[in-house]
Length: 155
Image (tube, rainbow, N blue to C red; front, side, top):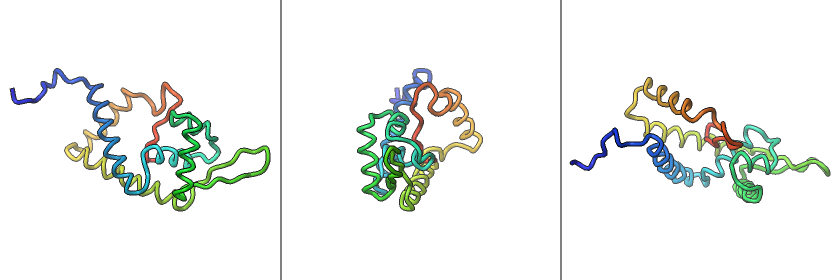
């Protein structure tokens, strides 16, 4: 035997899990050059889509504790990617994406698109569409079945 696993012995679920972990590592390595991680990018994307979210809302969407999200937001503030505004007593603080945060989000989208292109280079446009369709069908809508949503860089 030449060391290859017969296709009939492969589990699609295990391939997706293993592949997802490897791709997450690769994306995290590339995001590090921007001073970001997937966790920071996810929070940044959520803030970009909805500045009215509370820390608890952000935490729920990311699947982390409120305390962990506070730490994440502090890191984003230190990066100059978001700023907190205090509208007055009795109102919760709002998070605003800064110009630098918008730039980081744009750069992260470029990084993700480059990784997409590398990973899918051997596929035709039709095969890419079929793969995306199959994954969306198998996994359901983003965030379905839990309070979490994918923090993808498409922000």
